[in-house]
Amino acid sequence: MESGRFETFIDAIIAIMMTVMVLKIPQPETLTIGGIWDLRIMYLSYIISFIVLFSIWDHHRKLFNIVEDINNRVIWIYSLLIFIITLVPYFTAWVAHEPFSLLPELMFGLIFFLVNIIYVLCTKVAINNIVHNEEVNGISFKELLLINIFLFIIGAVIGIAGYPIALLIMCLLTVITWNVIPYIQNTYVIGDD
Image: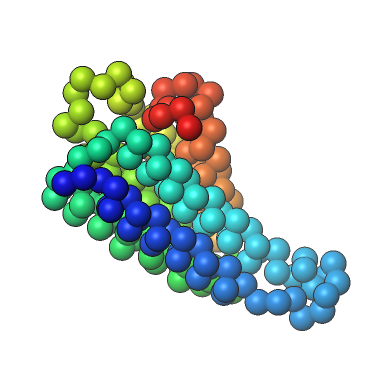
């Protein structure tokens, strides 16, 4: 099956998720610096979620510049990713409204942990049949996954120890590592767009 229609479907889902998230941010009670400051956790959780969704879209765009044909395995693993990312606005709003509660923070961290793992699986399944393409040979996510697992565990331990907001901070660090380290190491550049 050609990937164009599938690519458009994924683009639409991600655009809807980004729109839903921004609609969940309330207006400040007062239009002052203090009113905006009161919503800082909500803005931070929105920024983290937005960057994650944008990263998935960017990765997806670059990947499907190379992958022209897909099979049912690609569709089904991406459907799992779509299911998980459709939960992102819900957990973003939950953690934004209760940033110092352990359960919303753990769930927020867990959703991003799952997104990272499924994101890697989607790429591996999509490029599985492209063995003669130099752009995909040597792509490795092992270091990134290990760093992200490590950050999630640290955040969970600190959160359980009494500082739940540590998970939100670890999600931010995970997003940074996911987007910066591959370009520094130059090990994961799919397409040059």
